[in-house]
Length: 176
Image (cartoon, rainbow, N blue to C red; front, side, top):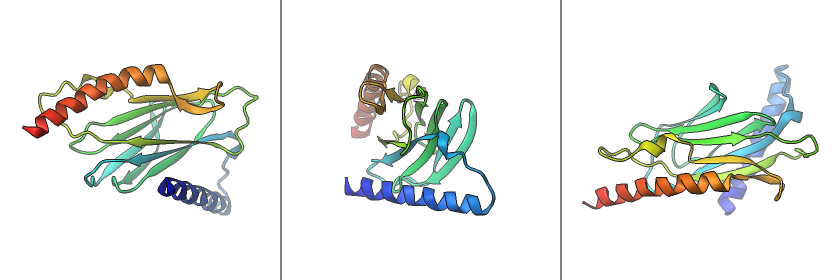
């Protein structure tokens, strides 16, 4: 937990320094539309090098990060957009997270909301039923009841059930 808090603080310090850097370069950032900082944490037990994390708006890649499983990653998203984060590494199933930042006008986005998530990359194996690995592993949206961003419980529960079957198949094959 302390690691996550320190990473969040570091992430926002970097955002502040990026903002001052962009102002020096006369690049205008429209921060009033920033509404959500998403931060991903890997929990793979073995080191994975060369992980590519892509941020999509619709079908267009708008940002990307190259990292390892020992480092975390994050993006700041604008309100009223549809995003996807794709996490990919050679030899592992790609992971996809869908994020909807649609908000009503009465929702205050200052300071921006923070959404943290853990992710595990699953190794590819021949003969696996990997149909559900192409679907987003989670959908994130604003929950008016709790007044913050969270998982779509219905979607996430249904896809997690299917992905757990794939993880069980992997465990069985590794134990042979």
